[in-house]
Image 1 (tube, rainbow, N blue to C red):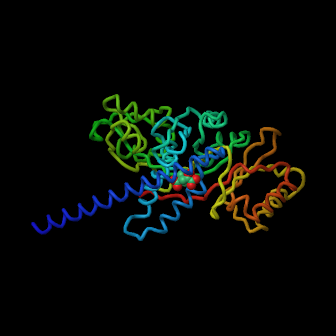
Image 2 (cartoon, protein in one colour):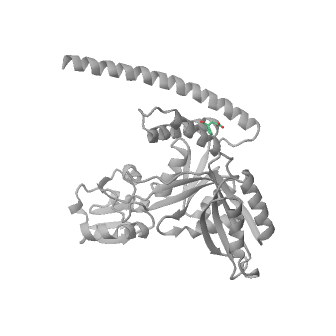
Image 3 (spheres, rainbow, N blue to C red):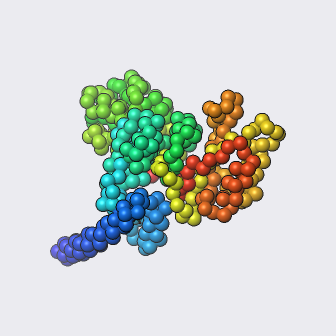
Length: 366
Ligand SMILES: O=C(O)C(=O)C[C@]1(C(=O)O)C=C[C@@H](O)C=C1
């Protein structure tokens, strides 16, 4: 035991030395970021550069030798970059609130915790805040893997001058949260209608007696659960932490593959990284002649461009005509994408690029 205690002490001494070194290096990195910030300020450039962040994160994951988990490296560097930005500029990010909802979590994934995140009541207000320059960036949900598009967001994208400059996938994990410590003491479960719907089977099986009540958001549900005995909320782990609630059951939602995709909004789209997505909206004037949609899509296929998603919405400017939201792999600065966009402009009634950003992959639930 004596020998083991000795070893333990010497490992801890080793860790103390490494930590001192890490802090010294972090200070050095912060000074470099400040220098970058001054140049950006002098030239009116944004502190937030999503394409560079992607390169930094990819590079550090490649540098890792495998002893430190790659996911951990990404989280650590997300926070380091978040602090760098805060040294360069007092950045504000508007998101669809209230606090502790999934959009809040998505905003934290995209920007870390050193950035000021400001909750907004509606998707339209997130757009308005960024458009008026009261926030630098915005975060809103755009689609769910089971429910499909968030139509408010698509509609805003057609009229807003803002561009998509990032995306975040978040697995939807619903949890039963309460100030009670045992599931037997829960008599009322409240949440957003979507969260209740996603957990119906679990609730029927495990809490058949409990009354169910719809409230405006999962955040509001957590607030109620914190204040009322016998009440549980369905919501995120973030909400449990924020309101000091116990997690009585984890992952009670129906599907483990249920994922929501969020977009980051800004004044301009992101620079090219080599692994990007471009979002466009187009009106192919379907009724002008047969095969318009097929011909439009073949322009992408002919350039060897992968179409990842297509979504149609009514064209609000011309009744009974339709616009299409298309996500494709590539960046407007890629030669083939540039050519395809030119051809689309010639052939379609209307085409607009509404965003370009580093492509990210959906993450699975642990
Ligand atoms: O390279 C930059 O432009 C920086 O400001 C540095 C840095 C970083 O910390 O690595 C910080 C913010 C940007 O979004 C990208 C990268």
